[in-house]
Length: 164
Image (cartoon, rainbow, N blue to C red; front, side, top):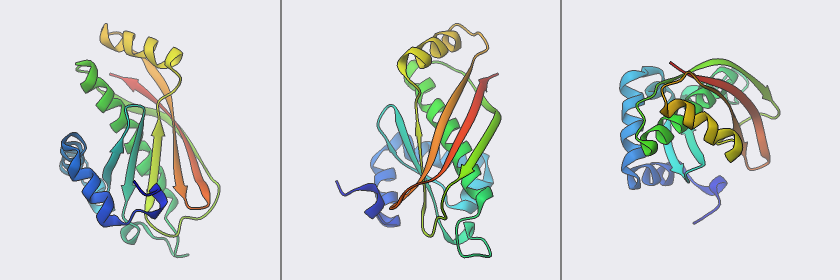
């Protein structure tokens, strides 16, 4: 497979369609969170511990011709939520997460498709979180999502998600 930065939008959509879970979750997001449809959000790759989510550049451009910071923040928030949703599905757990607190550092401009990679934390952090979730306890976890460009990390988002 080609490096992620060389993928074009058509390849991203093909990856999404090749994974029915990602395609179904993308459609759910578009239906339940209309902003994601307007942004052109698509869940394109999932490895079990990393989720890649993209957004079209056109509807998310600012007056400087780069990706709007609010769109980058929103894409990162969705990526974290979606990664947890996929993990809950795999565990057979009916949990719901919400973003309780978040921050983002913008490191360089994004001048094309917006690509976010959300990573699970280390096993020694994630497994106790999932045990609490599975037992019906309230739980919270910090997820890191990065907006990536050919030149490296363009933004780093930290989001604390809680189960409700």
